[in-house]
Length: 360
Picture 1 (cartoon, one colour):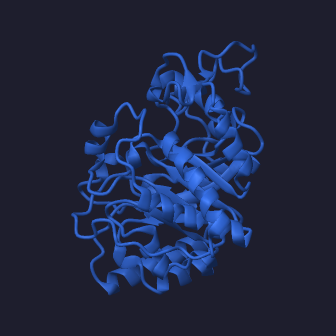
Picture 2 (picture 1 turned 180 degrees about the horizontal axis):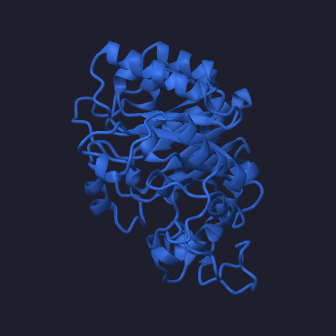
């Protein structure tokens, strides 16, 4: 049975008690968060973008997006409660990454409240709980029990609440594996077999996407295993991994059920450093045109093949995720006009830098 709410535990996304979009609200009240005045050129870009392509950001509770997504001063808590309603009115934002569920599962009722804040066309990419991707060690036991590749736990605590609460608004379910210290081919192959058994035990239907931070997994058995179980590789930009183009040499994006991507962390930066450098996340600080072009090529390929494409962007990628979305949308339009369906190879992003164990 899917996880039910714990009355003694605070909700991940606010209680929704005075949220006019909440199914639990009995009185419609004016929201304290109002939409920004979106530039008309954004509407034009959105109209020209294929409906197959869904662009969004990693979470939405950032007061620094004032004048970009919302107007007026606001707080993180207020945005957690009803900022999604305003976020979803942005012409280019048709998906969002739900990150808080990485740290604590949410019941179906919380997902239903999120769904009530968006249109029928909107979709969510939801992170699975970290315990599914974390081996139990002395160093991690304080974060709660591990359920490493436990299909029963995944179905009960993650998949059923998502599919029940979000319904047709459910998009990819993301399993993000932080660096596991896999150094040899034997270690990689053992993990690939275990992950295959896990995926094979999950309910069919949802789109499962796998993001890894051990580059040794980029080997022929990796895409073969994912294909056998209808799962997809998440093309990512993160200092622990080579570029999406390099990933595409092992995982042919043309063979994927859908193309799911996450643009997470700028090359050479640790997570905490990026937070300090980019806060309050209101402008592009470090443009990354090479990554933008590769994601645009992936989306153009999806458009050409008639499959869905997802790109979730973190503030730590360039400094301001909504502004990165705007630039990427324009790049996708350019790539779709002249693309031949291939993702051009680029040099790796700082391939020799130390791996960063972070969870953006």
